[in-house]
Length: 351
Ligand SMILES: [Zn+2]
Ligand SMILES: [Zn+2]
Image 1 (tube, rainbow, N blue to C red):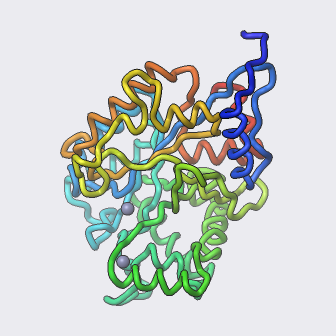
Image 2: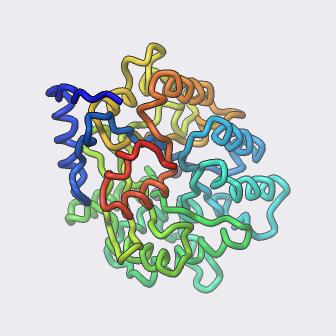
């Protein structure tokens, strides 16, 4: 439309340079040809989703909202968070919830396993992990665990989902601040183990190759950072790949405490559309803005952050409509992997 090339401001240049430096997994981010403004991808992760926090109806309301407003993101499903697998002899409430999880994808929402329990390793029947088994999040960092052990465990979770029509898209690391985990994480760090066991990525890649995930690529959510973020390819084999897709905006929708002091829509975008982290990422020509949230605070029934969430979505629609494109995390990794970088964004639309 506009034939004149916009002035490359220092701010924009710095934004592009830092984005390029962070996109180590693929070709560097670059400005679109022809002077048009490249759209940035918008998405979110919602952790800790289950029917026990706010009921199945709340998740249905959330999905209806996402579909109606054509937004996209992810919401985890933790099938064994109560200690039993809700795929087996589910209660009425669990059944209703699982039906919603099965329709999440068509509403624009991915489903990550936040592992099976978000707590101790689950007993899938073959081998009892025992009462003092490790917490799942920590176990992903234990250097002695093998690819086969991870693969068997992830396959067990996937099979529980398949029983009830739930196909997982990726994996979210279940964080834990318990005393045992905190102490062990410190030991691991002291021993130079600052990252998940690389066997995790290989196990996920193997399962992707077997068609056990929804797509060919598997997005993962481990750490996040407003500045040191990026999409990192962890394992790949042809069209199959595993990516760590880091959020670059935090949870200001009440966090897991459902805490009203932790709700702030202006953190994302102010009413006048002039500031907030989404606006900053757009102005810096970042490839994406992905935030994370927790079902405890976000849910439309009991969450103190729900009205802030809908406010943010509405402000984005009003002020940034032509600058952003909503995508599920697995859609982001599929397109990024297929294109070998962010070039697909220059087409300006996902259609
Ligand atoms: Zn969690
Ligand atoms: Zn723990």
